[in-house]
Amino acid sequence: MNFWRSKTNRYLSIIVILASILIGCVFYVLTQINNNTSQINQLENALNTTRNLFEEQKRYALSLSLLLAEDKEIIESFKEQNRDESFSIVNKKIQTLKMLQNSHFEVQIHNRNLTTYLRNWDISIKDVLLRDFRQGLVKVKKDKKPLVSIELGKRLNIKAISPIMEDNDMIGSLETIIDFEYLSSQLKQKGYTLFVLLDKKHLNIATELKQQPIYQEYVVVNDVSPVALEHLNLTHLKDYGYVSTPHYSFSYFAYYDLSHHKLGYILTGINNEDHVQLNSNYNNTAPYISKSKVNIE
Figure 1 (cartoon, one colour):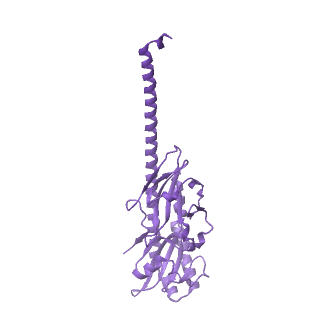
Figure 2: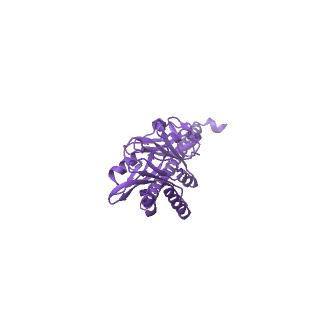
Figure 3: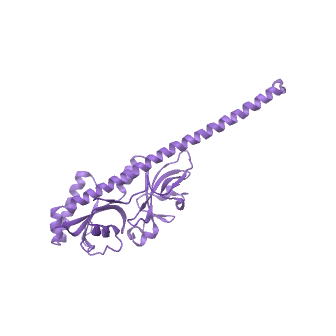
């Protein structure tokens, strides 16, 4: 009791208590800053990894398209309009490439007038007019140059289109198609979850996606549950950035069609174990805006 009777001791005790509270607050703030910094570093890595994998898949799709568009067997059967032979040849080529490279892709061949000549997954489909909703095809016919992009069609996927040329004349084109499942699996191995979101206003074109789950105004294109997106307000997203919910944090970037209209967002999610709050959204160009096309001279 004598200790508290001393005014000096009481002052010292108050100072010690206040100092302890201050030190605790400083420690808490520093811990939060450290958690934020750690989370942002993880999201930065996730963003770079995702973009690099997408660009890698685009280049791969383009290399397949160029290879098959110059294949003599495919060209001869196409010139003869022998669809049965073309179907057999194309699927044999696909199976060979799958065995050699452990890859999954589809092939569509188009006529000069931008109608469907052949789809390797269904020989019954032919003469479908594509020019009205396939910007990539129209551009390839105009420029007579290969093109790869995340392109909207009946589905949304990576499409690489190469002209089929004869004597400097474009007689048709060949397209390789790669979905997002390989990318999803590669990111999953690194501890990330991929979400490919398409604005639902495009479902009038992407009719094969009508059964996919919808979160807010966006269709979840790839095979992943949208549960992790709960509490995430997509209306605040810009061109790229980092956002979080109580349980997940996301890096994201927008992707565009060939007319520079925004189609949707690509998000990469990680667990938000420290419950970090992030809301960093950025506009304009570099370094994380998705370039939806790769035009090869």
